[in-house]
Image (cartoon, helix red, strand yellow):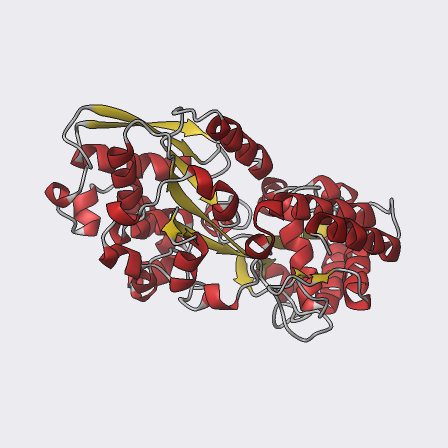
Length: 429
């Protein structure tokens, strides 16, 4: 663990050329003019330092380019709304933006086709599934930066303390183990300890959690690639009833208002045995005062289907069609998502990269032993492609229905019957 920390620190502070081997003179700046471009970056809870380091390396290589970083909203729906409002007005306020893995379809009309600006060699370096994800009507509207997938974080010291030899393989095992550990820790005086924390607020994060429960229980995948609505079935009902049973037992009553940072804060404070979160939480967990050397990660548990599921996440980089400096903006996007930059960024943030060859890099493997190149092929995508411009509404209907089940406002069977009807009306079935 401590070796990983030292590696992260060194990679953050060393000059670009010292760690990447890339000649600054070889960096394509897009233009020789003195220009300023804006980049909508991570919020404070994300990775602003890693982004700032990448921007600094780029400006060192391209002294004629100034990149101004704007902090984006931590709420994905708010960020998307901000983009769409600006783009509908054809505003040039944003040159380069972060694009959620589920947004290429809805943002494609407003994003530059990057194919003419990026070498085919670089395009071919990315995991193929991500290039497919970012290609809309034959146009490459974003470049993959990092991938994400749901993971189970667990306290190794507490599993050993209570006699568990391995992390839970099923949700039922997790429920049992979390209860045993929670009861034991509370008996020793920690009244604030809980067994399992996750993302239960009514937002996109709940869509990913609920999708993992549904798929792992054999309930389908909201909307299948063929367009079949798959929410109203006994397997999905059982999955959501199980999750609702966690609220107030092994999970805090307030978990229904938790996002990623809320779960991470409780886990980092030493007040949770298990946490569902994304890979980005790995690096910050290493630096936690309470759990830095007392945790590990595992695949999310399986449901009644016998197979686990991990929602596919991640962020990509796009360039606005309305940018006044498209060449410089595209050059920065290509630089930020190059193999050299992704190696530094990934190790600093514990975010698996989009460049396939980097998974063979020993420094990356040391920093992220859980990362493997085939992970994107075995994750569960949200139905953003098949529902296209309707995805935001699909997700909102889905997480709203799930939230009503978790809070006890609605019976699971009734909520899913109503959800099915709402999706049929929206999607035209």
